Image 1: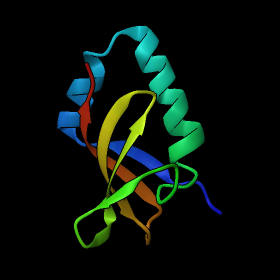
Image 2: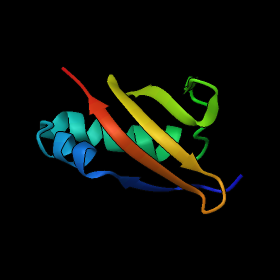
Image 3: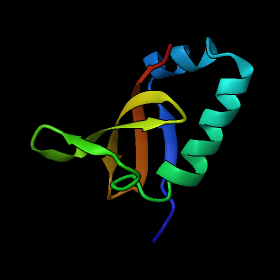
Amino acid sequence: MNCYRLQYAPPADLALDSMDAALRTRFDAGMRTLLVPDPYGYGSVPIGPDEDRREATVSGVVIRYYVSRGVETVTVVRVVYV
């Protein structure tokens, strides 16, 4: 299985920038080791009928993302944490 490339849409980037350093470190590690290698696994669920539009929780952070199989890219579009 290939590892997907990870990118963030501007709204997700803004949320990441406001995250405290400890949470950001855990989140980045979780994304890199758990979700990006297998974006259809790791407890993610599809949003609606489109398998490539998904939601998951990584290190306590809820994310919504799109998977582009053809270019092996995961694009995070929304990041929600408390």
